[in-house]
Amino acid sequence: MTKRHHSRALSCSDSAPDCPLVPLWLIADDIDEYARKPLEARLPWKAVHRDSLGSFRAAPFQSKAILQMQPDLGLMSCFDPAQRWMLPNASPEEMARDAGKHVLIVRPSDGVVIVEQNGQRRTCMQREAIVLDASAAATFVMHDVGRIDCLSMTRDVRTDMRHIAHDNSGLIALGHYAAAIMRGLLPMNSAALTDLAVDHMSGLVNAMIAEADAPTRPNGQPRDRAGISLLALKADIEAGLGQPSLSLEQLASSYGVTTRYFQKLFEAEGRTFSDYLLERRLERAFQMLRDGNRMDRTVSTIAFEVGFGDLSYFNRTFKKRFNATPREIRARFDVVRLAALAPGTSA
Image (cartoon, rainbow, N blue to C red; front, side):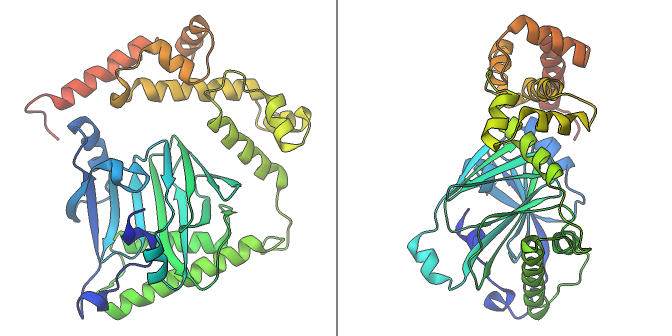
């Protein structure tokens, strides 16, 4: 993260007595028009301030665009993040400047995020969240994530990395409150109101963590361990799609359970492990074939990257799934890309 995203942002009172919060849209300079247009289309509204993000390679999560508030509250929506990103350690100067403990909450809007930090590993799907220490190094692996929402702040106590379930009451309240701020729906037109907003989000984070640490749900019912295990299993499948040897036996061994245990979880969804693995490999290949940044990769290269060891089997199953060959899909989206880049093309 850059320095401003590592800790609580400069408050309004540090810059001016009255500074209304406004949404700020930052977009990378080093992306082509083909990538820029769909990003602009994802903005829920157009009345935002705009500025340059610089190079996406130096941006948080190597995102192509970021929506945040001005002045910065630590809230960010990062669009089109990289598949893998490293969070560096905070510098000694940054740690000395802030007395509190750095906290980062990440929540993908889609796909799966896997975070590794201090020997721990957590997986997160849409509407879930992960809380981690933002001053320590971490590795993020993202699969099919189009947007990841973040909140960076400081707390009085250190926070170990943990997973927050989608039905966590504090997380739900925090999500709605942050969305209202980001959309400009709350009249945050003074330094005092802005500071209150930061304090309120801090309180919601504390409530969220306290509920996550409780042994039971608020209604007294124990957590559904089988459901949590299936989510974790699917996340590990996403992380290992590129390994041709990925198997249910290998995954079951890593969890210390029998293969039959995981088979029952998939059967509850009306499918098998093999069906799910093939589906995810084909969908990953489809996304890579339509990605303008991967046009230099051959179809066979993409097939092997998503874990297929037999090219003819890949072509056959791909056509059955998408009713078109991989080369036809690539050509189709290449035509769209070239049309978007053509002079005089309307936005």
